[in-house]
Image (cartoon, rainbow, N blue to C red):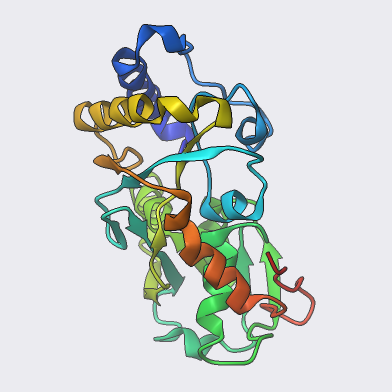
Length: 257
């Protein structure tokens, strides 16, 4: 995750450090896989190490994959294995999310914890669903932020790490935006491995921790904490709380897990 083109050299350096720290018998590949369908490896029985969003993990989109650890990112809105999403709008347009009733929201995709479920959860403090007048689907957090900055949409929820990356790679657009608030903290995007590697989780996590200590960058964790499936219960609980509600009259209702 957070493997934007401008920072892929950092991701590659992080992987090289992970690979160097892994036991030789795990036969770690020299390079990262970057398939067109980024979700396909999550379900692979050959997955050695990957990272996913919390919602696909708890909803079964990762198949039998198991959690290796929770990353710690040292950016605003994140830390200690948790993160929030920044609720953003253009500078000077509203002060809180409540000011954007019936506005247009940019959302990366319905299956996103940080861009969709967290935003829907935040709107339920102000309305019983259908808070926005319209939703435009962007396909990515970065594109959502661009849509708000460019006036295509009015508000969005942007993952804390993606928000920090946006400031780094597109400072001009970032400067046009303000934070209205932060969504409810959730467990950070988990590192996962195929079920067949469950016995090697200590080795995988140790390698991630070694790489985190050696590599640097906004998109690189400072540490990787131990984690279990139960650590992602808050994601499940939020999904159950918002099930059946919609962001806007024409957007899909959040499914029950």
